[in-house]
Length: 220
Image 1 (cartoon, rainbow, N blue to C red):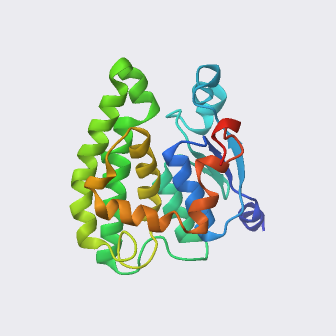
Image 2 (cartoon, one colour):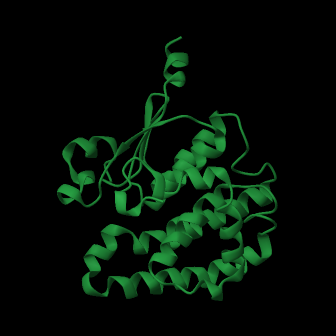
């Protein structure tokens, strides 16, 4: 009974409107039709609210997101996505076919491990004056690898014709590429997939422009 009551409680997402990793979780919740509460964690205000001792108890890495769900706290976006895929009904976020599932994980890891960490807020703050050039370089380098992979795996979406965790990772990364002035014309497959995904309601409602902590001047 206790476990059932825990599972009925809404998940709580501690995140930041423009965080790629928080955005991935919002997309996954939306695709699964999961209602959840948000607790904003401002990454810049007050020196970075993620750096407080209180937040450190939720996420020892002092990053976003942290998700309280089913009586546990998870702090890596791909772990959250895979957990809700394994425990909640709704469209699968990882394909049943093992080859396609491996491709989804590969693409997700290219983005989540090979591109995004090199241009996240903590890193570019350390880089200083050259931060835009730094971020542009590493996103461009990552997209040079991602484009030929997606040419082989993509159908309507990143892997075949079903939305997956790979698509969830792609859209926030393209948003960052545009922020750092990467020329998407060099990457027609990435550009096409992003345009298709942005028309889907789950991606629209998860967008940084319409979150509880979105600043007024950035709202759509």
